[in-house]
Image 1 (cartoon, rainbow, N blue to C red):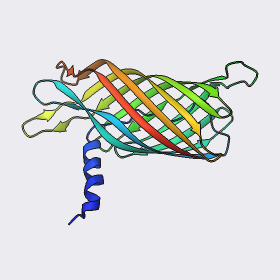
Image 2: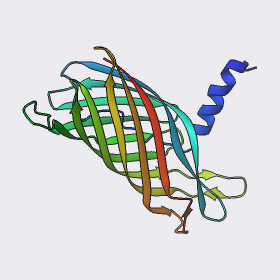
Image 3: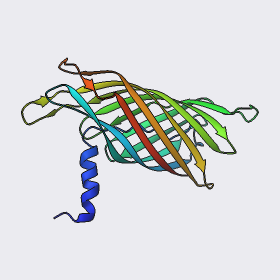
Image 4: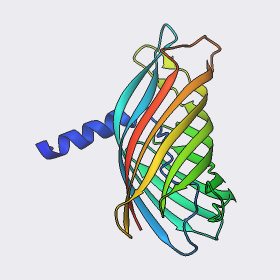
Length: 224
């Protein structure tokens, strides 16, 4: 018999593993130093689209999530991360196109952050955020992240018939702020909002996507 303290995390995992893929970025436009590790833990609230069987409707539900990432500095302009959450695993790499210059009046950095994520239900996502970071104070950074994402939700066998695969092409953007509280710890609140500009089912039937929005909010606890 499962004890009561275990019921909530098991229930959350069961709900979130159905289809939800995290949309969090939780990183700045500034790569971490070569040879340095960084760990992030982030409670989050994520959108989970769920295709219906009969009428083509796809509902979007908000589900709690917990994300974790281990990031490693590869060079002065490149770092990479392995990421885990309640509902998916993934990898990403960050390549700086422009590093902030202390001589500029506005210290702006730009980076590409391609991501790949998948979950146990064989759903997966490829994302290409562009991170635009503005250095504030000494080490804090305000980060804007326009992105393009392709999501594929694998179908499943329902009671009476099989629910077909569903795919989404999502444009969106995130806003986050890295706030250093000490030399080894920072907070990273981030919000994301995406909109499905195209969505389709493998059987060719039309999808009515409620609102078409993919919201996500997270609070990163970053350890250096």
